[in-house]
Length: 339
Ligand code: ATP
Ligand code: LTN
Image (cartoon, rainbow, N blue to C red; front, top):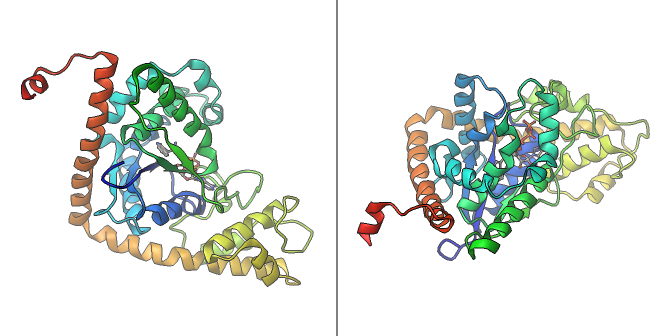
């Protein structure tokens, strides 16, 4: 708890351009939860370098992502929005937690298996211990709740295991976090292969709607979305492409899947896809407009970056000190003298 509020932590990587999946599955929920909790939203740039990055590009994308958080509706006066790399406590706690995490646990992580298959020429130790840094992110702020898409559940379970293991040895140091997965939009699928999740690292640009895609591109991508030969707009597992489009439409319009089925009864896929396209455009257009405005407010953004990093640092340091003491690191002389 901070004050009388429970704490929320979440983060996104600044790799690739954000997709509609990232927005509907994560960012949109962040905004709806931001009044209720004391929130920390991080641009997790330290996680990004587990895969080789172009430095200038990473810097640019990290700033664009931070701006997007604000454009999506997260108020930087009320929420702590910051770069992970600006708060060194993340790396320091990650090291300690590495010593409380087993190789076997990390070997079972599906994201590690997927990413090491994809980046066979660079299976580095950071990629392997990625979930430990994620656990440090969450535990540093004593987060009660962590909004993520379904694909991150396994990492969250591991975070809980590490925290419980640590608490069992040293007493109540960490809050045990709960995942928050939205009811709808938790897994938006690829528009070209509805058995795969929509992912910003997909090589096929038609598989994903990017948040900065212009309206015509959005309409075209949805028109080309893979469906089936049933010809009926029904929300069922046997029609994964159509089901995914219904999910997208319902999160964008706030309608329930049953209502969508009724709305499009007896109407063809062409018409349905057109409506989905319009619904997506009407969600993305105001977001893009706000991004463009914020990009011009350089000084304001710089102030947000500075102030919020300081705010994050204060909370993070408090937990880190406690942990360092528990594991037996010597107290700093200055701190002892201040007592
Ligand atoms: P990458 O392709 O580089 O692995 P990604 O698109 O999976 O990236 P992440 O940065 O791993 O995106 O995820 C950011 C957040 O968005 C996470 O909370 C994740 O659960 C959520 N998310 C990612 N893809 C989807 C999706 N298709 N549907 C719903 N949520 C998603
Ligand atoms: N691993 C996450 C990003 C991430 C995160 C976190 C999410 C890093 N640290 C802490 C929630 C809480 C991802 O790839 N989406």
